[in-house]
Length: 142
Image (cartoon, rainbow, N blue to C red; front, side, top):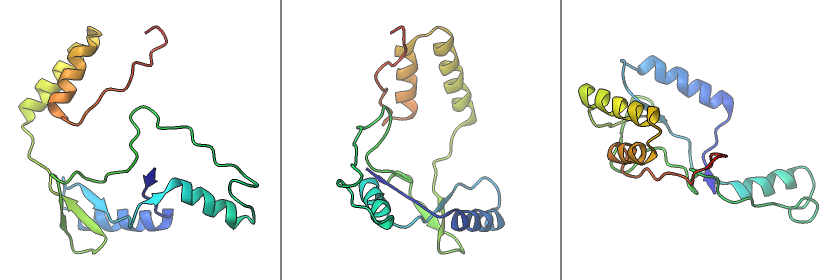
């Protein structure tokens, strides 16, 4: 698996700078560099402490959890970003949403939840998020 990492001070600085350049309503994306392989990060941390990975400390792979992705995505290719006055802060290009459609979707989700109609719930979610894939049912009574 790969994830993006950023030190806290760097993240805080970028968030403060984004708030200073924002006009209202924008969705900012911070340039977080290249993603890091989690297994390699674990190995480096073990070596940093003078130990050997898979020797002194074994790496245990537990598998992918429901809803978890192998690679982290900051934005989908369709959405894209535009530059800002700061080289490490981008602004997302998001499609304009119809407020009335949003109310209809939220109402449909609420009704599906109230009726415990999981098929209708999944269908509504897939309609607004085509890449949505429900995880296996993990309810204790299922």
